[in-house]
Length: 114
Image (cartoon, rainbow, N blue to C red):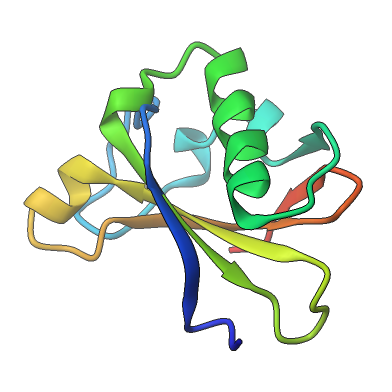
């Protein structure tokens, strides 16, 4: 499965953390530092990967109702997952809503990659 083919999808709850960027853009100040890189629980599937990112946003007090998440297999490392963070308000403003992509390793380690 390629990185552009969803292997699972999850609409979740998470907040935009006070976005001031225009639709489809994310400023570095909009991303809580605890969500840039961290360690979650071990993952064995796409939903586990989404849950790791949800927990990172929950831990910084984000309103999970403002976010959606999509998950893809990583072509360059098939054991890793790519989780796409989508801010619903950005999408409603006419943008793609994409606010970031996270690589989640089987160990649960996650990193913001874009």
